[in-house]
Length: 88
Figure: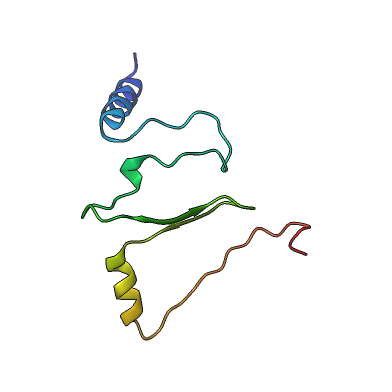
């Protein structure tokens, strides 16, 4: 077995011990966000909004990060929208 394949296998094995497994084939509406992604490193709730009607909107932030945002004088926002016939 080539050295790259061994390293790749070892990497995936180590990853599986730290992170949850990749989700099975699913749609964005049926995808369940694992509990390990709902908290940040400070154990604060990190998922603050998750709705699926009519389109799924997921918002990740912590109260601490939102407090920093409130104290900012200038805020730059990048709006990325997938344009469909429905949006026209």
